[in-house]
Length: 112
Image 1 (cartoon, rainbow, N blue to C red):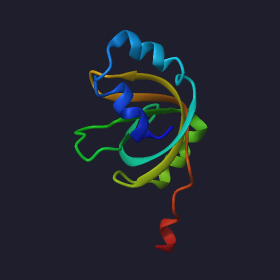
Image 2 (cartoon, rainbow, N blue to C red):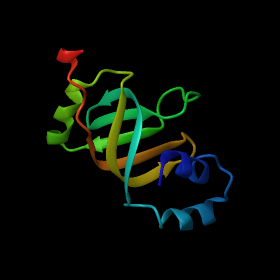
Image 3 (cartoon, rainbow, N blue to C red):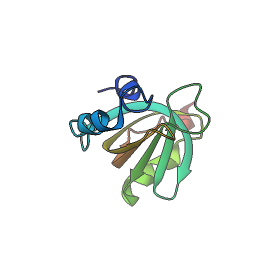
């Protein structure tokens, strides 16, 4: 599922917590491939914005150390395609948390 499909289901608080938690069980631990704007580098990965109205970030991606080296080719504000496994959502902060993340190769900036 795309970010745009999951966001209204889990982060807009339109569904009561009980039914939402039951629905989440169908999505938790599923792999997703999304494209967002690199918002920050973290100790364990990166964060990404998907919505222009978001002040900080919509997705927190946890990555293994080997996968984090690929982030060095990106700059804040770059559009990045990444993969990760849905771990949880936080509807108070309107954020998805993904684990086992990786990013697609960044463009070669030397040729730009």
